[in-house]
Image (cartoon, rainbow, N blue to C red; front, top):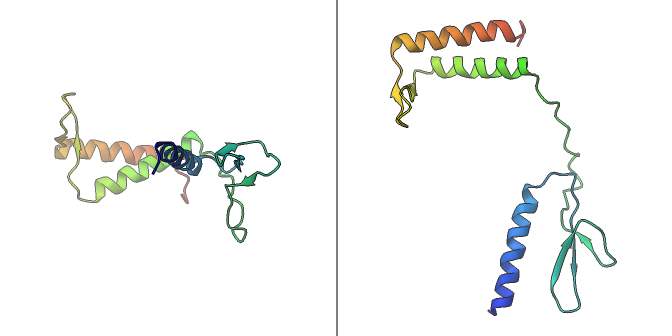
Amino acid sequence: MSPRLLVSAAAAALFLSCLAQAEDKVTVYKTTGADGVNAYSQTEGEEARDVRSRDPKLPPAAEEKPKTQAEQACETAKKNLDLIGSGQRLQRDKDGDGTPEDLTPEEIAAEKDLAERTAKAYCSEGG
């Protein structure tokens, strides 16, 4: 395999991996020049083809409404309560040395109390 072909293949693979992470609103077109080199662009050329095709049977992705700070706080409190109630060993880096230490029963009780108060303050009755 020639070095030029290898570099082109690597560039195409890198481009396509970045493309897979791009938002749905971006359309990318691919054209192949007379010399056989592929070019990618967001503007449609004469012989360009869309390389970001989706299954036409799937509905378009729904725009998700951003969560409010209250909704985020409620969600975090619920996750913390679930974690505290899971019986798993809970740890935190208490002294800043980069090594997590186990929480004491008193610290777990304080965290549970905080999560319960946060949930009461930010979660709606049915939520």
